[in-house]
Length: 354
Image (cartoon, rainbow, N blue to C red; front, side):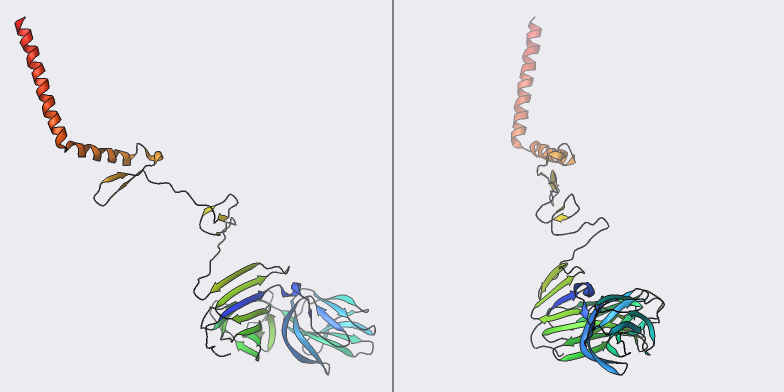
């Protein structure tokens, strides 16, 4: 996980609602146990009841919620058990062949447990790890095109009475193996871990610890590192793509904001009747009827709605003051005065002769 020699970006495929998109087969043996909620992990072996079992995911259930398992087993298997870390059975249900079984977690303390199948001779056939979670754990990934580490942010939120968080770890599984990183608390209840990833595909998830017990796990996130581009795709529980955003090395991603009225900005334009901004429509702001230049002169620019307003008054006043300074107007006034005085003299002379 060294710094690559060329600029790289991240293709981040955040797969949320993983349990509904694909149910994980979390044990292999003469039968299988498929849990309704599971998180994909590295393939590893676990030991239980003096037997080893290969697993590639871990079950997950919130403390107090029912744990549902689909059991595909030989006919001789008699029961499905939920046991604590010490091997003590906390609940057990009878199984007949292929069956869907629900186990109660009511009253169980958050921590790690084991779901196992037991045959008629008391032999354990399959066993899978399960986390009874006291924390709802959210994992997000942020990367920038070009140099720089990938930022993993983990937010554990307590959902039931649970011991305090002692440690948060981010597990990165890639082409070169597995790395577990201790995240650092940022002071607001969030935890952050940094990693510089070489180009390739990675699977990432987070674990929350209280002492040496796992009390919370996040969904698994697929991270694909490629050149120059950062693309984020989120898949909701129904398996369809919810959003897709691509950012090149020289771009700033657009931000979509929603208000309480569900008004969403889509582009530059006006807001339609349903509250969504329409990028193809241009808002008319109108043109002012008159403007004033730097010298204080009023200039008419049209605008029917402002006729008779102060802008028009100023414009007319300016034109009138310009006319009073014209030489032609002075000559006209002088001639008019001579004509009027001549007419007045002739009128007075005629009156005297009578």
